[in-house]
Length: 214
Image (cartoon, rainbow, N blue to C red; front, side):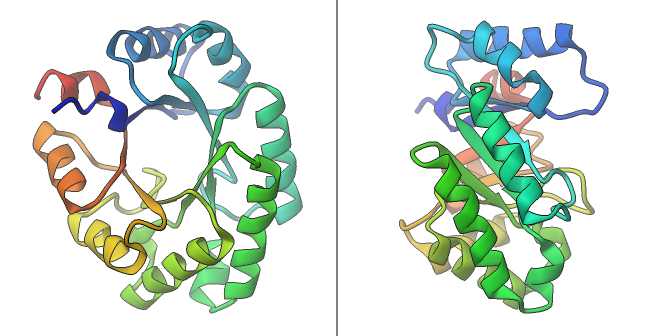
């Protein structure tokens, strides 16, 4: 089985250079990955580099803390799509989720989904900061807001994706919402475990190594 279309080839280091971003796109084209996932200021650059390919341009919103206001996240999303982004990975307001302000979480996701229209919206819930009930509530929010994906992690917090979290998400969401496993997926076996548990996308900076079975 080919796993290239599971991979969002990711480079979100704050010091990533345009040369490194170009190499990311070269690799994404070679392996025909699902997308490249990069910071907003590189969206237009990647769009040009990937013209004529099926590789999507994905960027992040409210990243990495999720603490921006909803208006700010909306403006970020509008700007990203105007620059050529085809997929948006947003970070929820984690404080709202933990405090049980689920209506606010749902409203924010809905606002961004309205802007995205047919563009893919993935919702990062930062599982390492959540207890089990928080994770269940996160699933309910993403489902209610009709986003396209729930995503485990930014890769910038205290932990990344775990098989148990992917299984929990799958139990809660079935086939209604897709799942993106992200953060700490370092080996081919890690990737296979996430896919077996129910992940439809893999966010990783090691896409090439994974395709080489490493």
